Picture 1 (cartoon, rainbow over the protein chains, first blue to last red):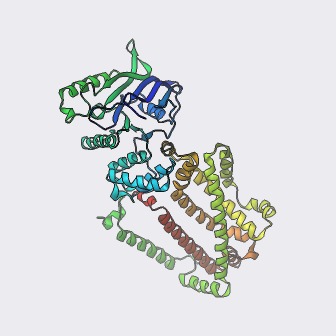
Picture 2 (cartoon, rainbow over the protein chains, first blue to last red):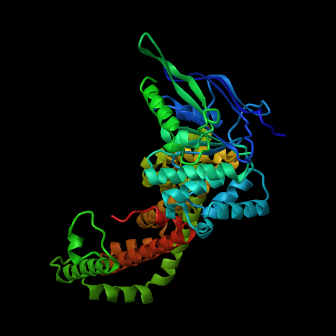
Picture 3 (tube, each protein chain N blue to C red):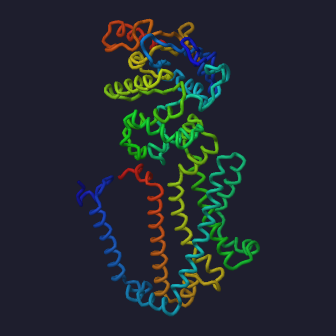
Length: 269
Length: 262
């Protein structure tokens, strides 16, 4: 049974080396379930960091695809996360190219142990939810970038999973498309109050727009020199700051002020 | 809208009508060169037509062609089973040296292998099937194993995060995910099978076949008959190639979607 204050994801002192390079230098943070009064929505947690800081490596560790050299990643039942435990939307939205859209969704259900009938029903519901009903018999190569992204997200929530990881969902998008993706993320979170999206991004403005909580990743500096290995440098509770889920949030002076501060911090990370 | 002038410019896409005109041009040019050819060793189209008639009515071209088709089909079937099994096995580290070894056997010529294959198969039809399968499979394994090795890691990871077991990943990513390319490789290997057929059927001519027929005509220097058989082989190969193309499009309609016209 889930309740406010529960730890949904516990990342503790995760360290990872690639060859001789220390990429992750002891990352620790928790995703705490939060229920805000008057809402039934889930939440968005952003892992924010400049390019090359090791965000994608951390993403793969949390997804259960790579083993850290040290540290743990545990779920709400204090079990180590394995691949398949959380939904994962990769940056380039991979889909099975030889399967149609509806088949891609159905397979996501059957591989997780759902019956073919249940998978079919769930796939059909999600196609409608994500406005993909008229694309169900299309192959991935026939989809636009936005449609492909929606299918990739829908595929990850065919089976009931509380956490959904997204790698750089705002990367390379023009401002209009970026707004669409931000809205899509909000829509997904609104689908069910159990959903928590953890997104990894370098886009400060987009992350601020959609997040409840932000953890800024970066490397320490000692005597002016960068110390290898990313850590969580600072966390921001956007709800406490009054910057979560506000209409026209980007117009607020507090938003602009924090964005400027974060941009300045980015240059030192 | 493409124009005829696009046919002479690099990296242009031409429409169906222009493509048709280009094909007609090259066919007509080839026919013209053939008719006007000064080389006495190249029989005229009429001589070849006459030879075809002779071969069909007097030398049993029909049954011989059927014999060859049976041989090629049998060898192709075995090649598919052996090569795909070995290629898919590359995902298991234990089998990788074996697959690599089989792939390297493509450097061996068939001629030197006749003796060991005769001992192994007992000769006759089984020998021919064995040699043809060996010739095709070593090349098929080389191409197909490379395709499997080059599957991006992201495709495996995608299935893993969906919660798929390794068996299901093997089926979806390796077997189903490469089916279109496997059929393309098979098309190339069937063509190689046709190229090897003369040599293989020549080993045991008593069994007949179009390869044995061409060697017999060659021995008597009946050039019109030799060319007539070559044309039959070419046409059969083209029909099979077209049929496999149709099969690929039917089984893997998504394959065409990813191809960009240039």
